[in-house]
Length: 425
Picture (cartoon, rainbow, N blue to C red):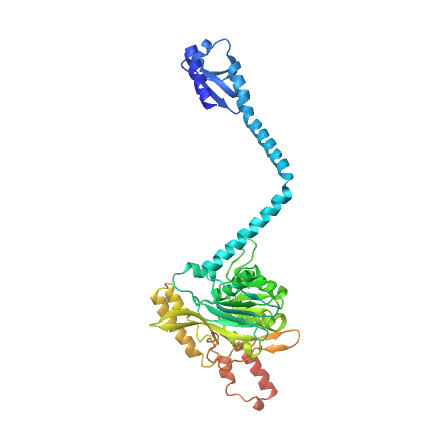
């Protein structure tokens, strides 16, 4: 069409001798031949006036009109032709539709299975053993995604959950591998249940109905939900819907609010899962008070991700070992992240002062109400505890009471003492 219009313009300009003649197009009037006002009187008699402008006249010819009809209807005719061909194709395919659907389903299944087989051979996966017993027994398990992205050898770990040990309280430093360890258990479980080999030397799994996770941080600003609100919504969903055959992963529950509130929520959620739900649970936390939970619930146990210090720097060993972690290594991780040395030094001084203020640690007692009992978190005897940030020296009220013997007070003196203490508070 473009070539035709160019040739038409050249031909008409030569035929008429009108130098200002040109062929154009707009959406309102279609195709036209435009001649300036000064030369419009020289237009041939077969030119039909279509539009008058300030400085030009526009014309149409029978030949150009015929071309216009073809050009403007070409798109509609093309769509009509395409629709007809498509409907014909569907009609032809309908006769073999069932066979084609069966073939497509078989090819898609074959595609998935060959992919899983290739990955199993390439990445050293092994066949899991699926049993009817309630068990998650993984030996030398690996995280397939992390393993493919790192250059150093991946540190494999064992996971053993059974009827007698249904919950692991996982402690250890940030960057120590707690989340990776938890996620690899979930991925191995998921791969086994879709019929894949798994990244482990040995794997025996009982029935798992669902995998629940409360990991990472995210907010829903548009929905008016803070990070902590999203965390609690996910926690509520787990506590309402998890069953004895579920696998539950909970990471740092309660860290989005005050220390006492957060610890209370974390303890109560873990206690509910341990006593009521009894799901297989991996519960990672920085609340060292949580490490006393196995003293009350025999099906819970402590594990930690090992790390060590060298020249005031932390070295992550990424191996899972029995027992609670001995410290958090928070300052060392901050140093690794590039926090300025002056800030690290200041933090060490502040930490030293807080630890000196806390001569004896009194863990928060959390009342946990269940359907059977009302239990209180016991004070751990040997488990490591973080310093109580709220522990301080004696205040004015304590000083006022230090030398008072209640048995020596008259009723009036006791009442005056109450008013005096209230004023101090």
